[in-house]
Length: 126
Image (tube, rainbow, N blue to C red; front, top):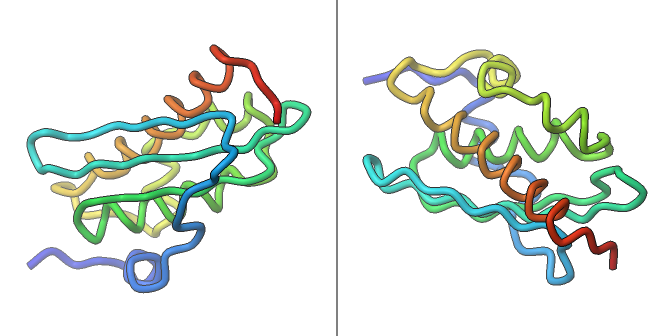
């Protein structure tokens, strides 16, 4: 049995920013066919800053926890700052992840990047 930090357990049991942003101007969806985790991230951008971010994750506890902490780490940040978020920083913010679960932190940062790319491509502030 892999050991999870208290922070991972907290974000799994009480995930932050779960849900959908109806008028999101950036949506990123990524999936890992190996473990079946699917993650969707919604961002609301105003003047180059992520003013709101929500997620929906279908997956293991680590996937939920990494999604939750990622939303907390990027809310209020500029797009440039958010794009610098790496899976290592996500895992670090959770006080570490078991090696077998590191791919979950990849998903969270990839979903965020996909949402930002979607926003930049469509470039609409609502």
